[in-house]
Amino acid sequence: MDPNSLIFIFLNAALINNFVLALFLGLCPFLGVSAKRETAWNMGLATMFVMLVSSVSAYGINWLLKELDIEFLRLICYIAVIASAVQLVEMTVKKFSPSLFRAQGIFLPLITTNCAILGLALFQTFREYNFLQSLAFSIGAGVGFTIALMLMAGLREKLELAKVPSVSQGAAMSLMLAGLLSLAFMRFAGLGGSHA
Amino acid sequence: MSVLPNQQEQITADTFLRGLWQENPVFVMLLGLCPVLAVTNSTMNAIAMGLATTFVLVASSTLVSLLRKAIPKQVRIATYIIIIATFVTMVDYLIQAISLDLYNALGAFIQLIVANCVILGRAEAYASKQKVGAAVVNAFGMGAGFTIALLCLGTVRELLGAGTILGFQIFSANFEPWVVMILPPGGFFVLGAWLLLFEYLKQRKERKLPNAEGATS
Figure 1 (cartoon, helix red, strand yellow):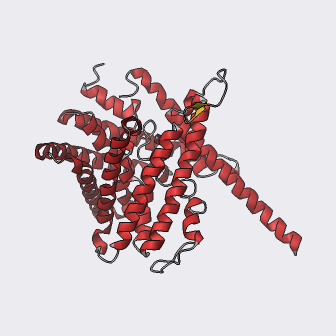
Figure 2: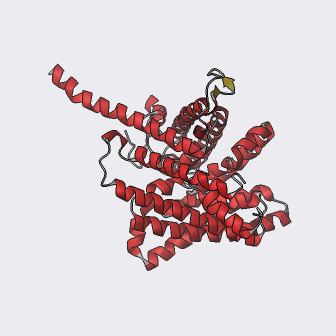
Figure 3: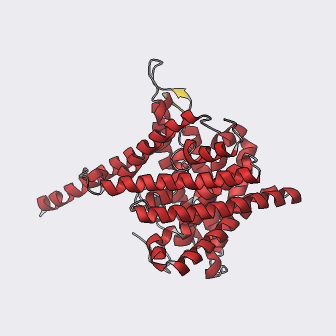
């Protein structure tokens, strides 16, 4: 497959180099809100939306900064845009679904410090994607994040019913599960282009 | 151990040591896991990442603490983020100037220090309420705790995954490296194993405690 084709960029971000399981981005919400499938799904959607908004904005900002020759301000501008996008999502959720707002708790404002989103903006700049490629990349990353979150939530719901030794309850068990998922996702490298 | 809000803390050894053990950002609070897992496939990367994060942590804590009366409450998070991003940009260019190899090995993760929740957490929960001295000492402690955690993972992963530490051969040439350890799954497994160990030690201590009390009375 052509590494610059849109479908490849999408698959690459969603499966081969999955943001959570291969690149270790966005682990805080991955471990924090993956206890129930419903919250995981909503968190995935919120993150996907913020990713899309920040990817488009980052593309515009990068163009502007290049024109003005002040690229050292890139990081500061990106994080400011992401913080505003998160604020937008937070207000929308609070208005339309207060119960969801309570369920997400602290993790909704914490999307700001979700490195998956900043990472997405930085990667698309490093790889010099054009506008359509950036779009495919951000949707792929969002889908990949949601897949990882949903898989993890499904596993953890089942694990609630299992008897595990008391030492391995909590974070340690989640990390081991994430390791196994990551091991499984490594096989997607067979689709081609392991490390872009 | 926790400090009540709006209460000035006296600087004691505990201000520093708390970050190393009781409130270790990685092993106890599970914050900032992304760089912990992503760059610890070799000891050198772990050290560099630890030092860079410590610098940003100390510098931003100092500034936030100095400005704590000037920052309006409504826009404090945005202000903290901008302060942190400024220092990260400095570190980013500094590492690029010192060693290009290291810069390429760490990749985007230097810039991603901005999104490290340990730093924002410290600014919000501690530096914005305390005097400069306490904030700096506490930030150093947290930074040290973070670096130690990175080292714990980095050495184990490099030793098992490549048979070396800091590039020096430790095992004999016959050693078959566990390649999975330096790949992404290894990071999850090693951190999980460390957490298991700490949980085991904690539970053993708790089991011993009532017995010891019973023996003395």
